[in-house]
Image (tube, rainbow, N blue to C red; front, top):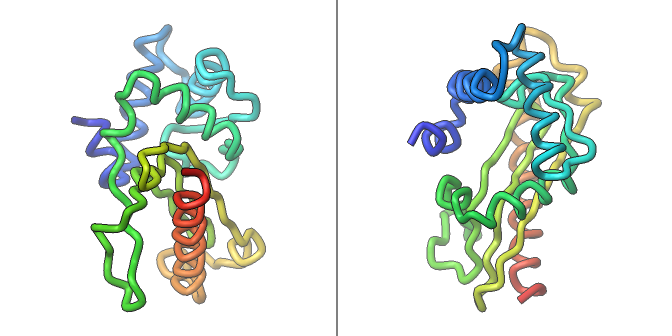
Length: 183
């Protein structure tokens, strides 16, 4: 339930607490959040074969955290073999021309979003109309715009909302296309 709520509500504090608790359960008390993030990276490399994952925390908010789309997809595929992950993810709905969610769309998506100023990520599973399931990761970023945000603008930077809307539209178009092509 804690993991489901953490993912559903993007509760970063809960993510940090769960990650630190997992690190403690696997060995000595972590010396810092960065130490715990490194332990998670090491575990992901050993358990899932991730090659370029570098976490400095458990929420993904640390500026130095890195994961490739390839590594995220690999982790999704391996973790879904138990069937435990997908039920924790929330449904992502396509939208009609007026911006309303289409809950009856034949392509279904269960995923986790990740949004920061001028950064948007979406990773999870898309199920085609015939039942074919694909794991996916989509990352979009405008690092130049992100680097220009002043401290005062961090909550709502100029252009951030329209950029995010374009990123979400791109995600929807890619997922809809994949759901049709790869069935």
